Length: 136
Image 1 (spheres, rainbow, N blue to C red):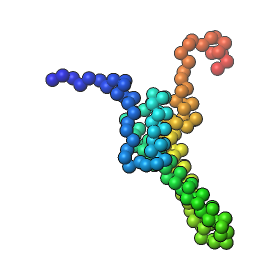
Image 2: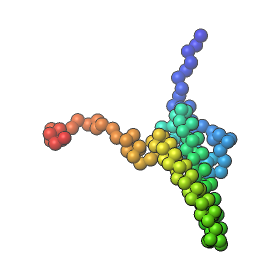
Image 3: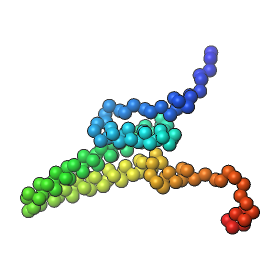
């Protein structure tokens, strides 16, 4: 029985297709995340769940932003309606939660500046001089 051949680098970094469940801004964000991870050569098949969660959070936050903008326009027309203020506050609270989730998912994928800095920090490969060793 022949042994299975190891996965080539080409197959390993192949971009996964966007799930059909994602639409609109979530689909665009999926493509953006996959592109960023592929460029950094950190795209792994095990990341698909986190990528999908981040894309959904982004899509929901974007949709809530549009709803908040519509409510702001209604509020300009009818500034005395307290139900509009309450609805707007609920939408903004939900949006903050989705954005918080998005930041967490992107940190797991090493896509925020702090995570990228940690990922790229590597011990120097060149031998250090005597002066550098004494000063450290």
